[in-house]
Structures are given as structure tokens and as C-alpha cells.
Length: 302
Image (cartoon, rainbow, N blue to C red; front, side, top):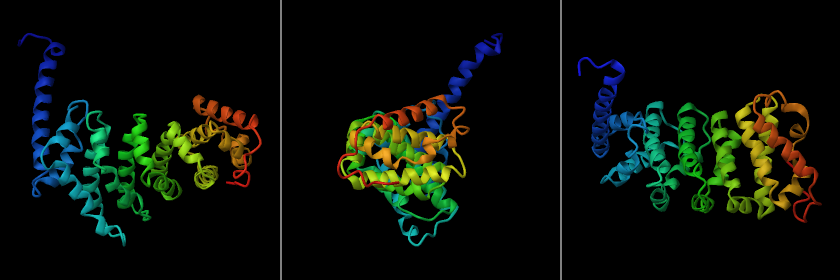
């Protein structure tokens, strides 16, 4: 074995190293239930590479007391939300707990268990905050990451669950006042809701819902004219394009689609993104061939 080339000998060494990491991760999961060891366990587990330990989510969910301890970490800082009084250290600790919940939300074995236990509701208090300080923004962004992990899988049951909660208004709130990154994740979540037929129908059933979404999207387009963000703009365009799949919404957009999307204002912003340019072209085409606005939508403006 000593004469083997390094390229042949290294896989065994790597496997042994991975095994040590797995054993360490399993012990850290147990440490979560010990208040004296929890903070370090959360920090170390948040660094675990998912490709090395693919069963971290089931272990977290099925280990006795672990989810309860993570929930305790989250609810323990509710008292610091109003008035806003949270330090960076406190925010980081909760975000490490949220990172583990994102792992659970992402895994096919634990995703529906996570939803059936109503776990996303514990995050909504963080999305409902208005402070723009770094501790609160980090908390907001990490909470959005958990919801983003849920919607990423294109599961109608996930969308149905979220629509029964306040996730859409909370995302719209973030799209209005969050950082660019938070706005991007929140808009992505709304986009995934719209891409599901149930979500599209929900957003277009009443003029109030359509108007609320249209107003926020329009305001973001206006703000992007001053400071372009290609990634955020791409999600906004996709939201508008999906709305045109609903006849009432498509006709309403003939009147309320921002002029900035009709003219070349964002040409340079989208120059390196052919798919976004194609979506924008399709959006304009869909609106041009639309029908007269149905009653109830014709007065909408963004």
C-alpha cells in the first residue's frame, strides 16, 4: 500500500476523513439537546456539507428532542423583535438553527413532515419585522431561505400549505423594504407560487390580490431603474410573464405594466441573460395580443 500512487491512495484517506465527520455530526446532533453544548453544536452543524452527510435532515427530525430544541432557539428571541433589540451574536445563533431547519425543509424524506408540523409558521415573526439593521436582515434572509427550500421542489401540496398562511403578504412586505438579496429571495418565492396553477389562480381570483402584487412589482421595477440588479429583474419579469397565463390578469397588465419594461430601459441590464430577454419579449407579446380587460380589473394601475 505504501507504494501506491497518491491518486490511488487518497480515496481511502478521504473516506476515513468523511467517516470521522459523520460521527462528529451525529454527536453534534445529540449535543443540541444539551443547553450547555447547543450553541457550539448549532455553529458546527451549520457548516456540515450536505453532500458528505446526506442524511442529516432525517437524523435531525427523528432524533429525540432535537426539533423541539431548535424551536426553542427560535421562539426564545421573539421578545427581542418588538421593540427591535437583537445583537449580531443572538441573530447568528438563531440563523444557525434556521439553517438546520432549511436542511430539513429541503430533504424529500422530511419535507412533508416539516409542513405537517406547521414548522414554517415559527419563521413568520421574523419576516414581519421592519428593522433594517444587519441582525434583523440576516434573520429575515435566512428565514426566507427555509421557505425558498420548500418551494424549490415544485410541489402543489407545499404551495397549498403556504397559501393557507400569510406567506404571500409577508413576501410582498420584504419585496418592498428588504435588502436586495432578501428582495430577490422573496420574489423567487412569489414566482414559484405563481408557477403553480393553484398559486396563479389564488393571486388572480380577486382584484385586491392582483393589485397588491402588481403594485409591489411595479415599485421594484421603478427602483431598479436607479440601481439595476439583473437577478432580481429576471424574477420580476418571470412573475409578470406568468401572470399573463391568466386571461384577466393579462388584460389588466395591458394598462398597468410599467413602461420601463416596454421600452429599452433595461437592455444593458439583460444583455448577458438571453432567457430573461426572451421572457420579456414574450411578456410584451402576450400583452399585445390580449383581450379587453374584464370588469373589475380595468381600473388597476401600478
